Image (tube, rainbow, N blue to C red):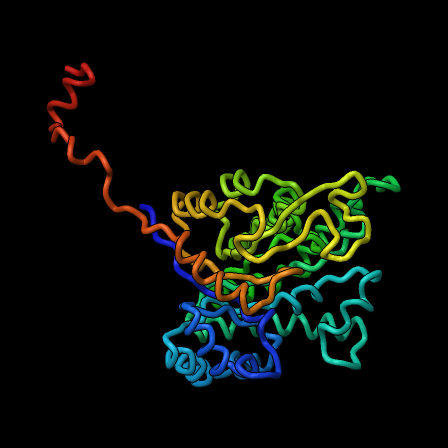
Length: 350
């Protein structure tokens, strides 16, 4: 049976700020509600919005958090550990760039231990909040070798995915104990960056039942991957959905790799919803067809438009795209009411 997608919801990571109304959960909730959002996705690394330690330990704290949102007519759609998940697996080439994702003063090993603990706490916090899906990144060990030059030694990628799976399996088992699916956002810079790499990870985990996907079509625009066919292939794994737009405009000077340019000059760039090339009408149709009934969550990232305008327009766009799934066949009026005996006649069965 088809189901109706929930929404609109909004991911708060790109909006949280020290200035009102973005400086605490109550203020940002009021702001989001006034724009028409029905839920918020909370980044667990931002202490202005949530105390992850308390959320993991205290059902009372989680009830209070939900109460704060309920005062504004909102609920929690999901929690996110994108930054902590990144640190579960970091190639040495990226350690310096990612060290800001963890508390200051930690070395690489300490950051890794801290990150794993953080993601595990998010499983407990999700359960305390009554959630059964969670968003994260996979991290990356083989991303520096995504292009096959210099020639990769045989077995390098397979060994990398085996190690990645070994790091995530204890976390996945912990999530299983708490009844929560772990939804990996397929994303450039992660070892899980397309359908094929997701399958490699899934196989390496022994097809762990808690391995799921966060679907975000914008990343596939930048890779020139068929984001609609991707739904046909992987819809059974979808636990979460980011509504984010993007565009790809190749030139005679630059293409998919971007020529080391910043976001404004790159051929592939993220855009505010409605300003890019993603066919959201087709996406929402396919998602509804396949029975996705989770949240449609706006993730704003744009190098041109302001976040405030992006958020205002995003709520309206998502509301327009959501399809009320039919529970009735359009040709029911012509039902002939055939009996079992008549079925046998129609099939030529004596």
